[in-house]
Picture 1 (cartoon, rainbow, N blue to C red):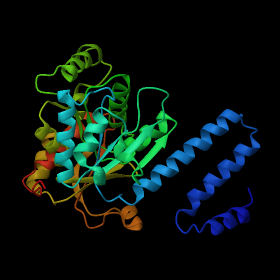
Picture 2 (cartoon, rainbow, N blue to C red):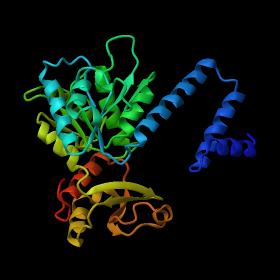
Picture 3 (tube, rainbow, N blue to C red):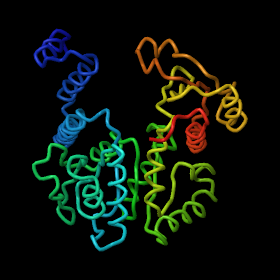
Picture 4 (tube, rainbow, N blue to C red):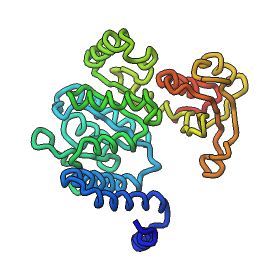
Amino acid sequence: MDRDLVKQLLDQAGAERNRDVLAEILRTTYELAGDDADRLNLKITRDALKEMRAAFKMFAAYEDVRKVTVFGSARTLPTDPLYDQARSLAHQLAESGWMIVTGAGPGIMEAANTGAGRDRSFGVNIRLPFEEGVSEMFAASDKFVSMKYFFTRKLMLIKESSGFVCLPGGFGTQDETFELLTLFQTGKATPSPLVLLDTPGGGYWHGWQRFVEKELKANGLVSPNDSDLYLITDEVEEAAAHVRGFWRNYHSLRWVGGRLVIRLQAEPTRDEVATLNEEFADLCTEGAVETTGPLPAEVSDRDELDRPRLVLRFDVRKGGRFRSFIDALNHLESAPPLL
């Protein structure tokens, strides 16, 4: 595709940032036209891109606000104790400044959106020929999008949030829960808190845990520490504290070459770093966890330059252990108070 034509199209669209990426999108579209691609494949590409654009645009105005996605069954009735659990949890998190993201349907989704309130709720709906309608809360809402494809919907339900809570549900909830765990285990998603919430005395997630222990962990299909990727609880207060507490001291991470840089809210002491190395030496493929200033690549990108840092050569197969490492960072004496 002619570079001058690409430049002209970007100029006409008023694009000032990320022009290199936008140029690649235009070139890919051009190449699809030359591939004589099947009509169905082109329609999938068209619809997926349109759906993602709509969701990106919806979330853009709230990118600096923490969000938690709540998953659970559309079939849960308002009389079910699970409904109250979801509503209470969302209310507590909304009161702490969080916004709530759901699939915009009935059941658990409606409960969470009701608890958070219209102003602090997002809905990412899936169009189905049966069962799942759209909550009345999202009528004429600017925080609602409707999607044709599950894969684009799940991308947006996961990408935009800093925490996740799964309540009991059917195949869809299991799919969402296992996808989250897969993304965390493999490092394809940035670490985030994941709570599996039930009612007091409920056996749904404990039954699920027995399957994981007996059929997956015992047969070596997952790592022993992968259970550290999630918390099972039947207490709303513990669930809310777990979501909020994940961000008490841990801020973000970035790969720079072969080194993992962890940005924090507060500078750890020398003794605290020594203790971390004693407890989590297995996370390092070589060397140790060390304090550092911004690395050159971070300086070049002006990437969170004012934050304290730790750096290590991280064993990427240790996703569960790394989750425990984040918990340890959040419980250091130097960590700021939980807000």
